[in-house]
Length: 79
Image 1 (cartoon, rainbow, N blue to C red):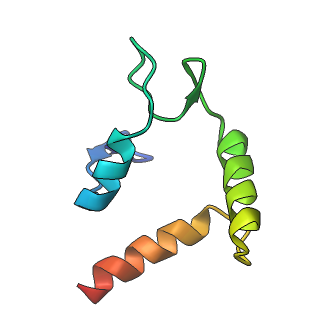
Image 2 (image 1 turned 60 degrees about the horizontal axis):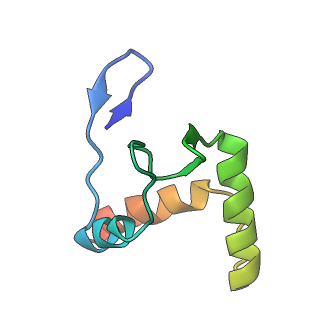
């Protein structure tokens, strides 16, 4: 679920493969967050830093989390 600027909520649907991968992420007891640091929510910059490391390790030319959004949009359009 995502909060819109107007304070409204809408659901973002995920593919089953993504759900299965996220279920494998180790969870901290009593914390409902998937991505966190000792139970504290990551800042946008912390998320960016992790993506940058992953892009570099994988040899991808991308440097922005925004590229994932483009992929998701394309995948939906190709269905």
